[in-house]
Length: 273
Image (cartoon, rainbow, N blue to C red; front, side):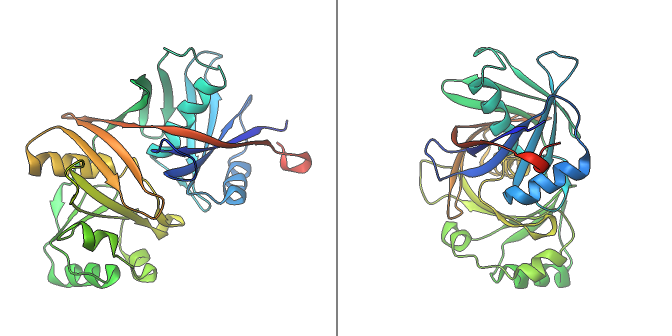
């Protein structure tokens, strides 16, 4: 079997922006080792593998960075749903349903955007230890306002958007900090957006993720609490950049973005399964 791979730029309405993900729709289960090798070959922050469940509309979905499989990924889920609709594997008005390591996820089309139904991952404790705070600031090479943790990530509040944009982290020190990655965030200086962020995850093989949907399952509830409202607009201010619309619930977060296909090709010969 020679599967087709599609590259999709997620959380953007134009090519060569947002966060690129590779999507591979499988006809039969594939070895985990092979999926990891394909992800390494694609060398994107995430490669998503889809497998229909019992021949129905639901799909199993797994996400791999170039080095590890991860439990949750927003932009590759958005890219996967985009591919299913674009290739006619789902009806235009159908909901995409996925079985994943993080439970059942869903995506639907809303006014030209794709809205993901994801679990909320709010911060659950503030970092208080002075030595830990000092190490976080040293890793980011920036003063920080506060630092917080959830089960996945470390969220670090900075003074302003300029501070977030100007970050040039020491990735060796970032990698040594416990957790999947660091969400650096602040209020937006642009009134069109509520907050901005960047996401650094060298521990899982991604120095900077251009637009991380799953990180907004943490930063969204954080800013909803700070700002006192549940409908938010977010911008990730990496070099590629991306835009998200968020609706924050008690246990779920709706993440909405757009997507553009940039490339489609087929694995050949020995590269196939």
